[in-house]
Image (cartoon, rainbow, N blue to C red):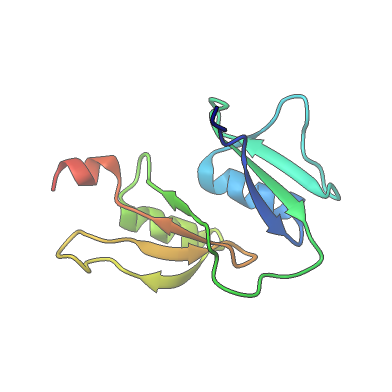
Length: 131
């Protein structure tokens, strides 16, 4: 028998604040029978269709080094560059820029959330289809 991924967990300092930030970035929502509130040490959010969940858990230590696991995000409506600009506008920081590394229009950018957890923004499906 095999296992399946129940949810992705993110260690953090402030579970509520970080879950709220990721809800904005991903368009995720609270779980209807388990809403998140300030002061909660564990906050779970999910995609609108319920297909993926992120759990934010408060831990006493802060992030020390590069993530060994991260999320790769593909924009639904914007281009990669517009999504990067939007994410930076809501509080992400840029860690690395790998756009154009394999020619014009290729690549991705590495960003970090307000607590330093890294994630990548890739080209959208529309951008991939047009290349």
